Each structure stands twice: as C-alpha cells, then as structure tokens.
Length: 204
Image (cartoon, rainbow, N blue to C red; front, side, top):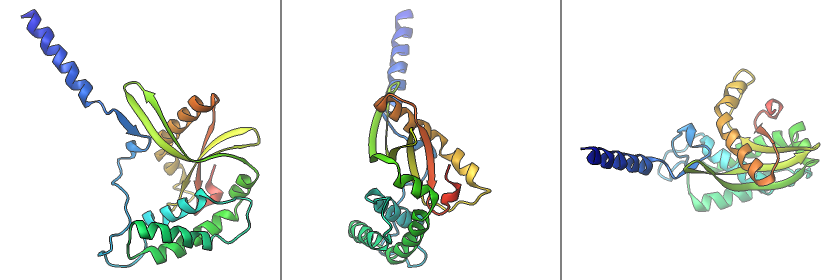
C-alpha cells in the first residue's frame, strides 16, 4: 500500500510538472486576446488600435530621435510593409492617425530626452529562467540618460490624466520582467518607463 501511494504521488508530481508552462511571455499576465489587424473582408471604418500601434512601433524602431523630420514618410513606409504582410481595409486611415500621434510625441520633451540619450538597444529580445519557466519578451527601447539605465515601452493606447495611474499599474508586472532581464544582462538596476505616444506629458 505504501509503495502504491508513493507511485501515485510520483505520478501526480509528474502531471503537475507537465502542466507548468515551460515558456511565458512577459505580457502573458495581461490575458488579452491576440492582436491582429482588421481582416480584408471586414467593413471599413476607424482603424483599430492594432494598426495604429504597429505603425507607431515600426516607425520608432528605426527613428533617429535627434531628427527634426516629419514622421509621415517613415510611417508610410511602415504601412507599405505591414499592409503587404497583413492586408486590411483600415491601413490608410491608420497611417494618417499614426503619423499624427508620432508628430505629437516627437515634438515632446520625452522625445527630446531620447535625442540626448545613449540608445543601447531597440526591440531587444530577452529570455531568462524563473524557476521552471522561461520568461521571454522584447523591450522596445533600452537607453542611458543622465547616468540612468532605462527600459522603455511605447504605448499608443489612449490615456488621460485620470487613467494614467491605472494604466501604469496594468503594465507593472511587465515592467518587473523587463527590469529583471536588464539586471541579468547588464548587471545593474534600471528604471521602467511607459512612453505614452498620445500623451507624452504623462510619460514618467
């Protein structure tokens, strides 16, 4: 009986181990539905946040923050690439909205700080062990400014002063994962920043 009990306990431990996720995205805790652009057969209308967000991120991925150029051309190039990958009815309007969002952000003090910062990496992939799980992700931007190491994440969602604190809390766990990745890679503590593209004045 004792041997049987031990055998069942061993099997239970194996089942529990098999159920443990071997890999977890840094943003998995958000439990959001997979993001995708509107499908070609969906009716037109306002662009979803997905299209605008993808355009903003791809444009900023190669942007020189010291540049005073209008981001419209870079945004058009990003649209051409993304639309080929995933055709849809809303890219034209999304391009106009993303260009407007980026123009606001790139004329802000937050962008001015990035212009004087040492950019250490963009879309920096990472993976590290957390117990039996591998945490993986990619940081939008890692830079050093005034002696501070900063991990930044661009957010194109709409935000107001009254909702900013709640949104920061929403992404707090993501920030902790990014900071742990940077600590392991660089051997130093960093600061996590959300850069709100629509309201750069609320970026802290």
